[in-house]
Image 1: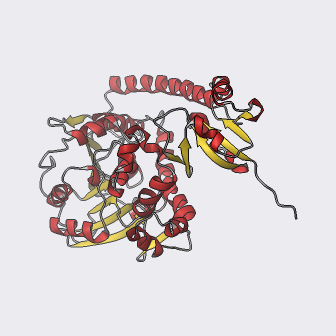
Image 2 (image 1 turned 90 degrees about the horizontal axis):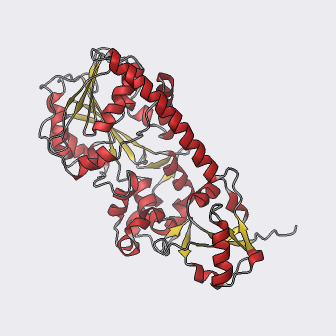
Image 3 (image 1 turned 60 degrees about the vertical axis):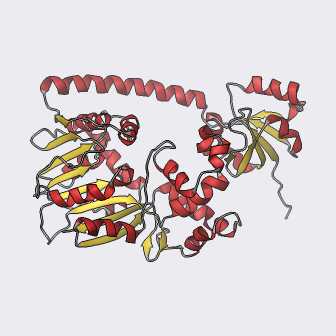
Length: 439
């Protein structure tokens, strides 16, 4: 059988067209020799396993063709390559994309304009009819953390209908396999007053009220923008002031603005690791919880240090496979980043001021110190990206001499269960570590 040799190519450009071509699998049919970009700030960074080179380095490589990824600047780049770098014009091609990047961006903008118009009309109607849950409280003493989360709301797009809002709840469960099960999101709360601490735009507020049938639900967050999103979303589902409360809190406040023993259940998903003083907040959780020992009183997710995200994605992938997300920092700063630094920047935006992570033992210690007597660690649920990284790079990382032994030792002890999820010490080892607490 005749062996098929792939053509060797150089990719030029790492912008939107490049990302679109990668997503469509265009480059999989070729042997990529290098990736080039004329932006000096990107040169030296890594993308898809290739160090980004300058245009004047192209002739140092063997290749059959150069594929330019920008349709908009194709002619300009072609002239630059021919005139300045003496590249044979016949070897320059445009990377084929199934959907024009410019067309898709234009369609997105047009659709968003239509959505905004619908939202504006419905918002006006809700205000006129007085059906929206009021937002109490304010943020008096802001800090870097509260400023960041007021500017970077999780899923800040507003929904145009109750159906779209509900369907996103289901979609979110699919994005984070095992989240629904581990966090016990289908538990009945018909007799419960629930505090959703760090409620964001209302994903769990909506679900716990509609699906969990919560008696009353209180959403708290530092972000006014997130609370206004949640306010509109609850109105879409006809959830009003008699059913729910929304409260803006300060990131540095000493106390949660609730009475002792006033809450049946606390939901806190992906929040504490971004706060200034997690142990203090957990003690406040214990203060406001009703002391009923016969049922769970809290579901808390924090980032899991014993995870694929920490030991493979942060420690290996973002250092040696693709570190372009740090291009704005510059190469000097990026090269000095520790794994902990990379982890912080990789979870919730590269400028996120804080993103702590704990082992199971460490976080159970925090919960016990707060007063919780019984804690069940469910394991760490992964997101779909983490699953893909695990399956593709775990064995490559173990064999790479650049990776430190502490990370290799963790990865050697990872196995995959029958469902294809990574397991460490008998528990799933995704980044979303979930703890179910009892008083």
